[in-house]
Image (cartoon, rainbow, N blue to C red; front, side, top):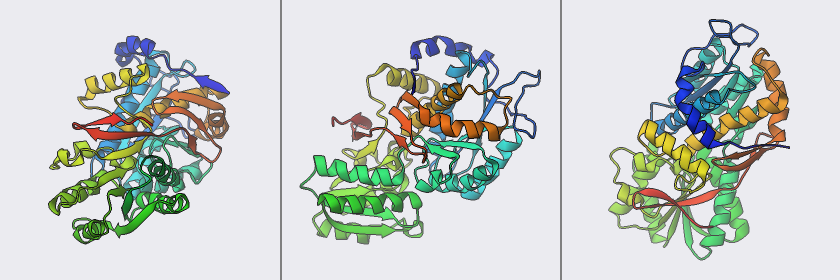
Length: 396
């Protein structure tokens, strides 16, 4: 198995030159066979990315797009992939399935050969139904529904929903075995309901004391008072939140209004709550979540990535950005493993990458990652807590 090591010092010394190299930010062009060439005939990789950079979960898509650019700039500055530069083209799907399919078709028309995306589960599933027909290789950084990787051309960098539910229950059983637990989830969302289903099953196996499980839909996601009162009355001292941060912010605010102050525990959808507009972030103090990435980690790779990201964009990257960064280095490793070139059609690239990605090991921001033929990654999660307005690693 081939192990890929990313030498950040070299990348950092080269990244200032990246803007002089062909590849980032322009519109792609390619033939109907899927090959790609620049205006002067130079072959290049055209890698597309789709995610929400506007709308309710824009913080996820923006971090993915921005971290992807950092990775592409590094790779191009260091010589590209197998000697060929990358052109990085992106599109906004607004966390909408129909718009995501339209975005995919637009990027395909620009010559896209490989897709990094989409960022959220429902759009990713919708796009997956099209990529499988085209035999386009699809690597989602953060689409966590198992439906995102249902087809053999689709792989993920992030944990899927069953994994998140199972690992959350296992973490609580190990670290908070005596707590009285309540859970609230979005039954109208495949991400949330997928995590909840597997959390419930594993919690039962482990003997966790789950006293209340409440559901809501996006049509009712403004008033949680009835559900929260049930949790308070049941004496819950920990609330599991397998939901997105936008709904969690409302829940934390309304808990505060009724004097209900349990420990809150979420999954990767919680990442972003500190950037939620019109939310008192002090209410998130002590909130914990499982994530594959902790921005305060002290290893060289994380320190250098966070510095680059913060310097470029004025904010700390979340785990979605880290997943995207790792996605590009996984593609690099898989392409090199199979010795591919951009003259190949998108379909031929896909056929080769399906096998190659299962034969690599990536030392990334989100841990040591390998992939199964099912598309699932294998890596270990980390737990973080919000402390003094920042995400801080918890010792396992």
